[in-house]
Length: 128
Image 1 (cartoon, helix red, strand yellow):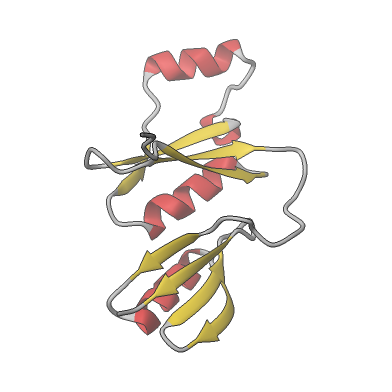
Image 2: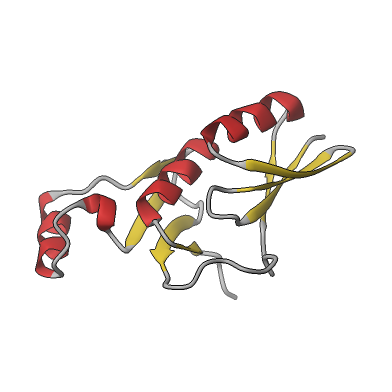
């Protein structure tokens, strides 16, 4: 039986999208760059981690899937075929927090909000 290991977001600027998702989700953080990782990037001609084409957002507790933000050449142009559903106790306050991080409110329904991350990837915010 397969287990979910990673969720990968295609995007144009992985570092900024990784920061969004790390801030949006409880229990996640952008993986720190140690000297070995910085050396690997420099060997690929990348001097600044801000230009890293594949940024890891890792869970702070074991067992949760990792998130990767990977650079792709084309922008998002259509609706997602898969999306994340997030849950929060206070729908309005969480909407405001996510919008403050850079999300955009797409649509409101009773007990459900559809938002988009800074690169246009839709996700839902649910309440009880």
